[in-house]
Image (cartoon, helix red, strand yellow):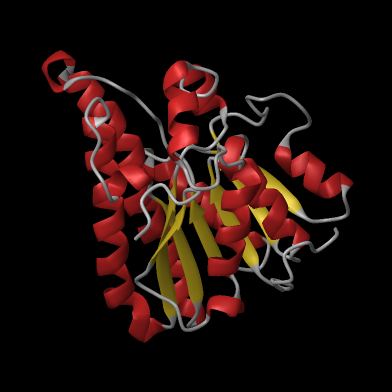
Length: 259
């Protein structure tokens, strides 16, 4: 596969949760393009936006990939993902992209809403990191990249639970970086802003709405981001190009927050 990032991940094995669609799909493709063997972990193989399944596309382009069905809230599924990576050579990189995006005012939220958002976005990230880190410690190296959000740095009304969950991911990332650094494992967070995916087009319609247009006009770059914008940042954090970076946040938001 063509390496468009400049980063080399040759000989590395990467797990991408939520790798079938959106940001996860783009990340898996860019990791493979940088030489990594990729384990695509997701509930479904078919991308929500259509097209060839991610693992099959990587293989068609000359890379090596495997799809492993995975519910990130299920311990047995998480173990199967790590086992699949071990069979391919080990676990060098984990990118936690699996997540759900929901809107709602606090007075309208239910316990079921809370559990759904926290289970996938927080529990899935924490325990997938635990499963992968155990394998990384054995190798004495690794990179974990957690997908937070601009909402994890700056709370937004109407997205209260989502912001809380992504804020938890951010602080978990910092703590885990401190804990795993002595074992040679780096842990960093990505904070996407307004990114054009099925989540922002269908799940919570923002793109193509007056609210979305207003967001874009408020951004210094005057556009929504693409999954590729986030994927390139994920590859940077996964690779040795960021060898002295851990416990950090990188915003991919077109200048939305400017911190």
